[in-house]
Image (cartoon, rainbow, N blue to C red; front, top):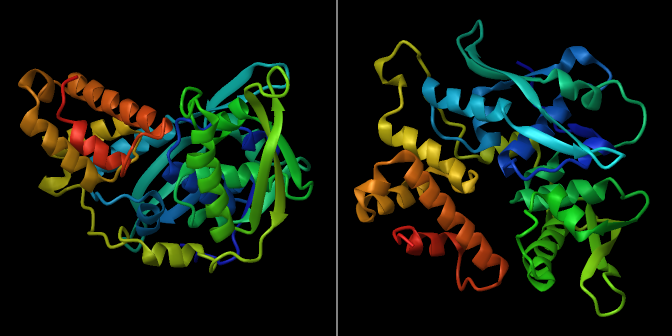
Length: 346
């Protein structure tokens, strides 16, 4: 298996960088960046990328280790559509990946292989212009999909040094729903300022921004922002992929054996995986299990033991917390509020 390099470069077409990423988690965006850093855009034969299983677990922040679990991971990954606008105002939607393979090599070591979908190939291979590149380490220290996407959106314009973006368009590229952060002051505080600090601390660019245009002229609602992008040499230490994996708590794995009796998930694990989707995989299995146990102990059986009813309950609470957060009304943490309200029926 190929040794991890320290100088992996992510090369990305501009049009692919304009994608809407509302349905992708930080871990999935990070995996896509790693995938791009491992392929050769001028060699279609590199479309299949192999990871040691421990590396894959670290990149995706996964901890489960049996076949049934990875089947769920695979289904989620290869049914992950992305959306890109067309020049004439329409859109195109397709899946990034079409094959997920989990197997042992000739030495008995487990590995994961992923292969790009045919529809994605023109955007991944054999292009000569309208692309940008960055060193992979820039993506690894960022802690949210907002931060990672903000980095890519602005890195594309580093050479120009300035980019004007409509706020609705920016939200789409960051993966923020249109109805999230309805007030600009909350969007500025919780997204723009958080991203600005993160990029300054952890990446090779910095940015400032100002109001670019308003609806109805001076004093109207803000329509767009003008970003100034500059080179940043004051970032913290580079977090290379090998170090990122070494620091991960997810790399120590047991040997998976599909012939063993315990490979199947128990009902509780199956429900936890199902419910993680309600929170868009925002929380790890430990926090998910805590919320699940609280709900099971407090909610009536008509909700607690009905999969879809419990899913809808969790999704409703998650949406409520996001809405309250966008209004700046959370005193401590979003997770703390979830723990408090997850047992409430209304």
